[in-house]
Image 1 (spheres, each protein chain N blue to C red):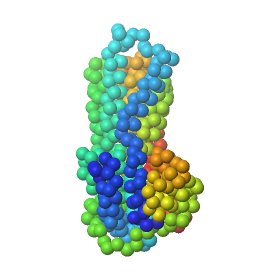
Image 2 (cartoon, rainbow over the protein chains, first blue to last red):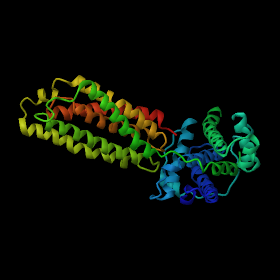
Image 3 (cartoon, chains in turn blue, purple):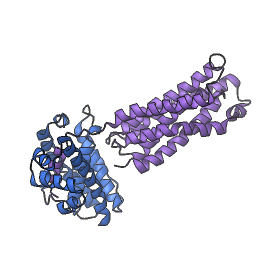
Image 4 (cartoon, each protein chain N blue to C red):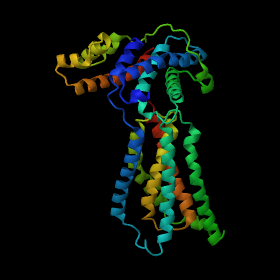
Length: 173
Length: 211
């Protein structure tokens, strides 16, 4: 995380790649104890990853990373359960002991088409080409006549839009 | 959407630096309080006996306000971090109880029990209870805006502490104007005014500080 905060994209991907299975391990027992299925598991994991990303400045590098991460996961999981009408009491100690269980699906119920549909034309093109297809942001930006900064801002806005969608998709369920 | 894709998306966004809630709070809360205080004192004026008979009581009031503000601000900062426990955040409040009980003790020691009630009730309860919350309004709004960049697990408590910090700074300004000098009056009504702001802050935090 320290390297990532210094702008090391590779380190950041590695970190998030390791954080995701940890989050599944934390969220899974919560969902099971609340007596509901695991259908929302990956949605909550993704929403938490997004929160980890957007709130990364609230981690103070002079404190250990794991308690911070678990607190974000706990807050997001409880928030998700509360929004869908469940009351949960969570003991953080049992949570952090949760093992990262074998992986099932790694897709959220929020499918890419729905995400793209919620974005405006430019954002949609950027997300589709850079994120879904995996082209470089410089190429796609040049194609659309957008500066590097403008691409960055548009991608950032679409992330925020995605954050709002997570909350709403659960409401609709 | 695949989680892998989301991670790519987030990595792509790494260059966009997220706002630092703590820094925002430490800058904008004092700025808002100072601006409000200057306008208020510009309108009503600082008490005229500031350098003579009013010196000591004013020092007591502004000192109390500063202690409340600093203690609550430290607690608010702690609660910006999601892993901070509510107890750690509210521990700051312990620092406030000491000067308050000291104020009451000083009153009783100096004047005795006789007339305590009339000293405490004073003549400006209404002004105290309305002006302090009004002075705290802008600082509270700006600090809540700063707090939205944070990630508190306890939105209501964080809001309440932000309210107390705002009230503390409002008390500094009001203390330069108010001529009600009995320490028991200050202990009772300044505190109640601060509690009112804290309650408003806690409701606002409950609504606005979710993330």
